[in-house]
Length: 405
Image (cartoon, rainbow, N blue to C red; front, side, top):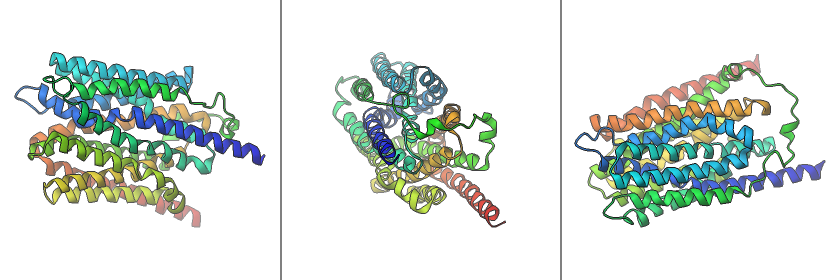
């Protein structure tokens, strides 16, 4: 029994490492789309620049629209083949974006980024695949390991932008989006090394409990609060991050400085993942989520303090760490709320709601920035984060009251 359990841990670690490598490669498309999407949209538009962030919204819409189909496809062909297909969709999206830039077609460019987002919807399932293939006490660390691959994505994506952005000059930004084609194809190769539940025995697969109705799962107070905190952490991060490159360039900084700001931000999003799982195990999920929300408020305070480059970068770093704690903690809370037989429906619905809201936030980022400026993007963070903190506090107090009753 001990030997079998040891094998299970070894297989869980191998799965998490392969998925982390794929996160590093395929995940590099996200910082490229986010850092360059708004600037390329600004370049493609005419006098009215209010829709400049619409391509980034297309990226997030692609993630939202792809969440349920991705889950359905993987039920049929398995996660390994589904993840590989996601890498190919990412590559196709990069090709369409390049074609649009050569044709100076704004809406085709937005469609290309939507396809990149569709490929990214498969990537969002990596963390769940790692958790589902791990023993209960290893789940938070498995999620953290996978998201830790984003540390390398934070380096690979922005460096690809800096070194390829002018590759097809005078067509601006085309080289950066061409690099997405290579990343998507390479990611599919990495994912071909996965061995997932069909081949690997897991204690979760022996769970005899029948699946509950989806609404019964969603109606759990813990699930609702975890969903609220996860959505808020991700949407606020997208809202501020999407507008940040436009704000930095608008304040006189170069596109490369804006890209490096996003690099620091993405690095801050994923670097804590190497120890977030241990922090969750020591201090509890709710404490880590609350810390993340407080860091998001800290981001807003720094952003409101001035418009020097260090203030932009510091705000983006706090935004990244706040997202990491808030989102990983909330994801871990969600994973406690469903049985193995319920995972596909719950995970697909969770990501659909999450990325639908995130898409709306990225669209509103451009609208709010164009109408009210950078400071308003920061002000929006405060009431949303405080609302989540109140909900989390109420859940904690209610849980304590039940335990002492």
